[in-house]
Length: 375
Ligand SMILES: CC(C)(COP(=O)(O)OP(=O)(O)OC[C@H]1O[C@@H](n2cnc3c(N)ncnc32)[C@H](O)[C@@H]1OP(=O)(O)O)[C@@H](O)C(=O)NCCC(=O)NCCSC(=O)/C=C/c1ccc(O)cc1
Image (cartoon, rainbow, N blue to C red; front, top):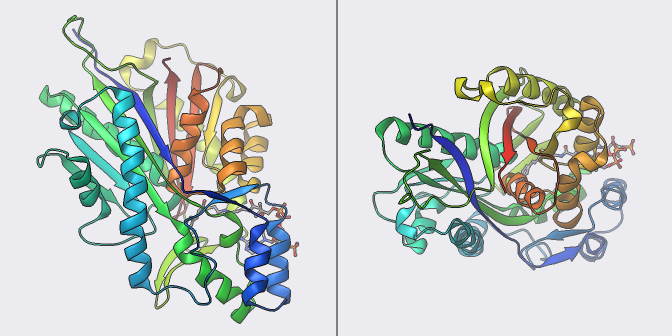
């Protein structure tokens, strides 16, 4: 009997040019006088550990924030261009023709156009009109792994029908569209808000392919990068006010409570246990490590306190999460994009066979995936 499995067969990552984190001081003081809230945010900015943010320039360096209409137009022009580039890379790495893509799962928390940006992406890529598309909304930074979870379900459905599946997953974020308004609110309302110290822009894609598992030599299945073995999803009760992105008269407004690192750290052992306890039947013959330290960890780099909290909770060293730290230090937090880039960064360096991945978003929700290196 053939045993179907799920394989990540391509990655693509695209960022706009990066600017040093220190540039924020120049821009902020160009438009606003020193004040307790602004000075404190800029002091926090100097110790986030982020060296550079990838930002669509010059979206922050403006006398006034853009309107919602302008930010949507920027996303549909610049964001879709980034998504297109990342998707072309992922499809090329998988060695597929565009008409072999069967599904698209896309995610963003920085645009809400209808039709969604996935429609424009599909059209620009030249995908078949019959491609099944879903655009995830309301999942924020958890979007990269939520999209992978949904892609896995599409693959399972295709296996049930006896059909092939190559699912294009794309995450695209232009978080900078809310940053100029953030700066204004910090000055006007004297609120300490962290968004401008953390966020960046970018797009990341991967292809998740259903490997039918047959031994037919005519089956030219793409080379696998990871096998996706399991996935898990948790919502933390009573946390709706801790992590939010609300639509306001001036655009999307993020809220990040100071509790977030203390919510995400205890979620991680729960994800870990769930991923190991709920392994699909066919995986029972797999020999998995019994200690978290025997996995590599690909965690959404939401902030230094989030990564450090998870290291402590799981008794890990910094090297277990080196790909997360590398992406964080060089690009900041690009919301749903980051975790896909972390997985791509991890596969490019030698490491442990088994990989735990985790990402957190509004809800508060936590998404987890168990992967195995295949390269
Ligand atoms: C790297 C940080 C930002 C700074 O490091 P630190 O300086 O060692 O931090 P501290 O914990 O010592 O805090 C420094 C100061 O900042 C204050 N602070 C500490 N978090 C806070 C706080 N959320 N508010 C407002 N003051 C604070 C904290 O109270 C403290 O104040 P003070 O004692 O008076 O100096 C660190 O605090 C950190 O990683 N925090 C967690 C960041 C965080 O919540 N990230 C968001 C996760 S969710 C996500 O990934 C995406 C959301 C998203 C949403 C919308 C989008 O479009 C895109 C994305």
